[in-house]
Length: 213
Image (cartoon, rainbow, N blue to C red; front, top):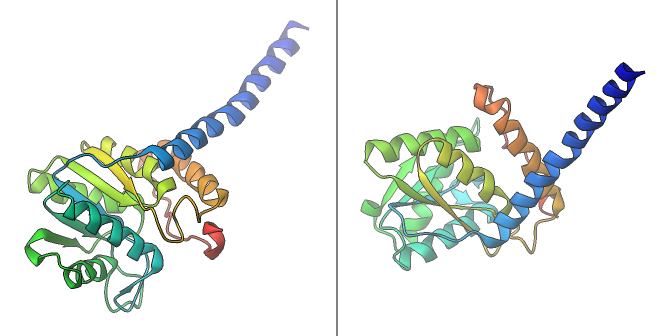
């Protein structure tokens, strides 16, 4: 009888963990989306998103507008753009972002375009390497609200001092994005802290069109 009680307790504990752990991280991601603030730093990093033949998508444009605003406020003296291109693209997310910033008044000398990265982890690894090479240590990550928690965590794990400035407008803002995004980010974060840290890459760029509804 004792062995059966013990097995039941173990199973109950495992089931409890399966429920509690995702809920804890979902709550942390939800809170971060609504309470993240930019801190004066060395670099503003614009997380990549889709572009169409050099024209930033609505999601990327909302990130660029937010980065321009905090750049003008003096929170950081330089902007890094990140992101490679999809197969068949004539340009990259990083290049499209850089061109948009230049067209909106930012000097070329204040922008570094890093044409690498097709997901959060590889993008963070790429810009973290560039920052360390330039002896920069702190970064403001401009991205979607529900993406802040994971983006900051990965940057911190790579030795950077990171804060996040979530977009306030656009399809991925808190007002316009639904709980599908929160659920997706919870799963992506759990994947990162388990298999991701073991070097197993799981791309997070295949997002359904209705993720923001």
